[in-house]
Amino acid sequence: MLFYLVLGKSLANNSLHLKPLMSCSIKKDIELSVLSAVVFAICGAFIIFAYSLGATLLYTDLYKYGLWYLLVSFIAVLVLQDTYFYFIHRIFHQPLIFKWMHYGHHRSGEPTPWSSSAFDLPEAIVQGLFFVGVSFIVPLHFITLVAALITMTLWAVFTHLGFQVFPSSSKSYWIGRWLIGSTHHSMHHHKYKVHYGLYFTFWDKLLGTEDPNYENKT
Image 1: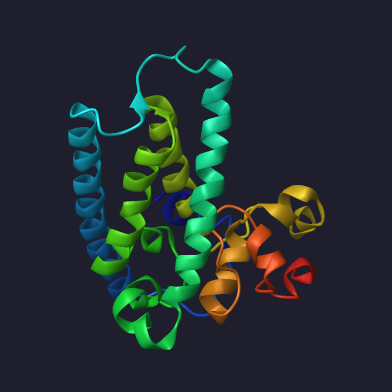
Image 2: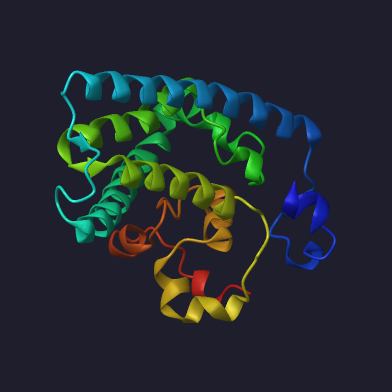
């Protein structure tokens, strides 16, 4: 609402959309987002239940591994999630499973904040299972887990804005080259076969799925 109602007119010249947005598409994205929220809530409830049984590696004592570990584990989770997301995202785009696994996320055609969490049920389950799995394999303070979830949510909204928030010249600096923003991800929604990462451009660069025109795009 902030970017589309309050700041919409001031950002109109920075739009990355190739065609007008349809209210019916946004409505469908919201419906899928609600479905995804339910799936994520179930995953969260399972994590809490498993924690109560002592089955996870989650902890509450800030000093159990030292304060430095909070930052290290937070970065580790982001790197692991980005790797997980990149490879499952590429799989989702395989023709045999795209229509029932990932089509809902691309149904609106143009990325908007409302499509950031618009997942078909199978994809929502696969996405939610990451945090279930990581809570069993990486020692995490609850603060770290919540911080990672908040980062994921805000980052997804940012990359789906459909506006070029920062000047195109920012891509020539390391932040623009290595962190995914709205321009980078909009190209994925328009071309489908490029830009599969979540936070970082590392895997796209390494495996040749970054659009060669990205850093020259204005």
